[in-house]
Structures are given as structure tokens and as C-alpha cells.
Amino acid sequence: MNQDEEKRKAARAAMRHVEPGMIVGVGTGSTVAHFIDALAERRHDIAGAVSSSEWSSQRLRERGIEVLDLNATGELPLYVDGADECDGNKCLIKGGGAALTREKIVAAASRRFVCVIDPSKRVEVLGRFPLPIEVIPMARSHVARELVKLGGQPVWRDGVVTDNGNWILDVHHLRISAPLELERELNQIAGVVTVGLFAARRADVVLIGDREMA
Ligand code: 5RP
Image 1: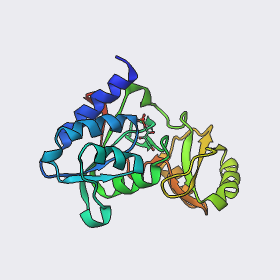
Image 2: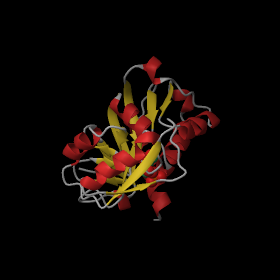
Image 3: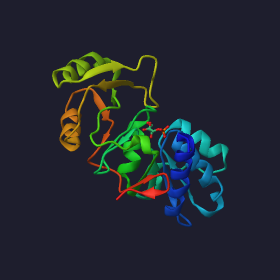
Image 4: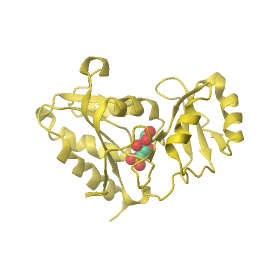
């Protein structure tokens, strides 16, 4: 089975967590694209979606799913999103699609976070995938210097502007054996908007294809 079929399988399996009348939090990326397609088949059965990016909002609307404002919905029962890496504790690296800030907000506002991945995303130690960090543009060089002091090698994702008008640094050569501690430390750097480590709010359920990770 190729990688896209694995993504589709995981996305379809996440539909088991969707219940009638739910407002569903929706992530961003190629795996979530399959989830949105599956959700569209049940669009009359759900109350709408809260989206984590302009890209996902457009795809949802094109498929007839109403996109709701998180400020109006309150806490969500379910958030479904992909990841760039996932360790054995369901801690994640996210942000390959530059949507990490809104993804982190919707994940934080949801009771259950179901993460959908293909097998290539499962790792023992996070960090082979460069860690995305969203920064305020004027702080780019300052944040980059601080990251070098911590042993990382930040690379500016030149030309990419996030939905929030910010920039992305991708940090190479981090071996993240203590994700929660690193997330907290990086959050302290002035100018950092969001760190693409999802450890404080990790996934509750991880679906690798249609298999649930223990
Ligand atoms: C976007 C993300 C995505 O969930 C992550 O990049 C995985 O994407 P894909 O499903 O395309 O492999 O964090 O910011």
C-alpha cells in the first residue's frame, strides 16, 4: 500500500470518532484532506467544523460543510489532525504545512485529539523531521540565535507567510528526548509564537492506517 493510501485509511478510520450532531475540529494537510472528504459524506449528520487553516476552511466549504468560529462554539468534542512525527507517548511534531498555531489552538480547545498518520511518521525519538517554529517576523534573527545556543540549526522557510502573517523557522539537528521540557523552554523565547511540538497537548488517540497505536 502506498503512503497516500495509508493516509486515506487512517483518515477514514477517524470517522469512527465522529458522532451525530458534533462540531468537529479539523486539522490541515494531505491526510486531513482525506478526512474532510470522508466528513463531507456525513455533512448532514454533523453540526459543522472548526478549521485550523484557511486551506482547510476552503476545502470544507467547497464540500458543503459549515465552518464555525471557535469563539462561538465553546469546547469541541473532537479534533482530527495529521502529524509530521509521532513518538511512543503520542507526542508530536507538527507544522510541516505551516498551520501549527491554529492547530495548537483547536487541539487545546478539544476534549479528544485523534491523530491520523501513515507508518512513516512513527519514530522512537522526535527530531529527524525539522521542528517548525512560528515567529513574529521582526524576531526571526533573534529567535534563530537562541535556537543555535540550544544546539539546533534553524533554517528560515523563506517565502512562506502563515495564516497569521508570521514566518517559520525549521530547526534541524534536534534530538528531542524530553519533548515537554523542550516545548516549555522554546515557548520562553521572545518572538516565538508557536512551537511545533505537541507534548503539553499531545494526541489522545493515534491511528496508523486503521490500527490504533497502543
Ligand atoms: C500542518 C501539519 C500536518 O498535520 C503535517 O504536516 C502532516 O501533514 P500530512 O498529512 O500532509 O503528511 O502539521 O501544519
